[in-house]
Amino acid sequence: MTSIPSPELIQKYDRPGPRYTSYPTAPEWTDALGPEQFARHLARADAVKGPLSIYVHLPFCREMCRFCGCNVVATHDRTRADAYLDVLEKEVALVARHLPNRRTFTQLHWGGGTPTFLDEKQLARCHEIITRHFEFAKDGEKAIEIDPAITRRSQIDALAEMGFNRISMGVQDFDPRVQETVGRIQGEKETADLVQAARDNGFKGVNLDLIYGLPFQTRETWKRTLERILAIHPDRMAVFGFAYVPWVKPHQRLLPEAALPRTSERVALFFDAVETFTRSGYRLIGLDHFALETDEMARAQDEGVLTRNFQGYTVRPADDTIAFGMSSISDLGGAYAQNAHRLKDWGDKVEAGILPVVKGASVNDDDVMRRHVINRVMCLLRLDLREVAAKFGPKARAEIEASMKPGLPELVSDGLVTFDGDVLRVTPVGQLLVRNVAMMFDAYLPRHAQDKKQTFSRTV
Image 1: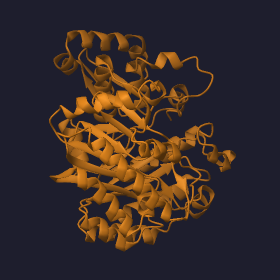
Image 2: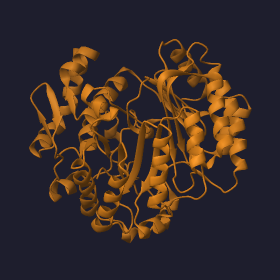
Image 3: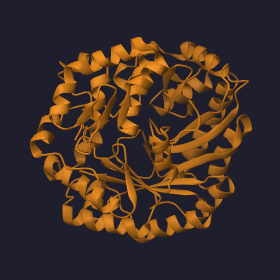
């Protein structure tokens, strides 16, 4: 059971910090990695045996939710999705030519935006674009994110026919006042009905996303939402802390800042979720995911194969991810590579036959080692330095021990971690603050210490 840190600890460790869905983190990426460099990384990835993961970004939403941190296009014009698929078709063909020997994938993930902004015919076309060039491995995973407020059962039926077997639904909060404030109106019944439709169609995993820290959330209204989520009984939940970053996402300025819960209230909301879900058979995974003890995510944590990427915690069956669509991020061939953010820029590059990558980072040996270390801390809540030495050599262990030396005594004294000389363990008190623990291993973070402009969201 995760323990509640004291108010003094919360205040002490509540500071800007990365979420570590990548390492190096996005502020380290530059335009030095462009189309030519990405082509070389694709060639390197093509020489590696093993399947791929594929991510497709479908950016369209009917409305812009005021809490949203994603790259979306708000429109009611569904024909814009047809034009988008025209470009996507060309991008997939363009990238596939760089991967002549590596065309099998074990994981497909559609995110957004709202992928079910696309109607049944458009969804089928998007799927065909991928499977025309890449072959789906047996027993793989096809996952999609949806907004229950705009998704029809017929779309769930169509996705099941395409082989989709995992689905994630954004709920955020069922309280009417919160929903109206953030611009996300969604009923409990329509959510429950779609969960049932997914199960009727054989989906093996249903995830619901919640957000704590939204305007006008109180512990009383939040607890009602949590109990209603339990009644739906998803296989997993993701309970994210709201990242209020209006300097990055200007539309968040529409939210009433004075109504945002204070840090102590945010912490109470999160631990209400921990208490509610863990007493009902769910395990807290890492920082902010919950899974039934029978779910493969819980098993993956036990087996030490749980990982973390841009979709959060995942049981990723492939080492490399190729991503398609505007702003999407590939992680393969020793590099992170991000496509153009703006729809027109992405489309213009693809139409010109140019890989639409505009920035990224080539990772070196130290990055690979530290990414592994940070993933161990974030996913398993432990780090075995003997494993680091076995995997990366004794010099790597010495470097990690050197990274730990300045901050470890304080973390131990404050009860966030224990260390026996070989194994670092995050305590129940430290689990909420695990980002702070991971920051100890980030070689790039010191350069941001004097930044006047806030680079990261706060860790609590």
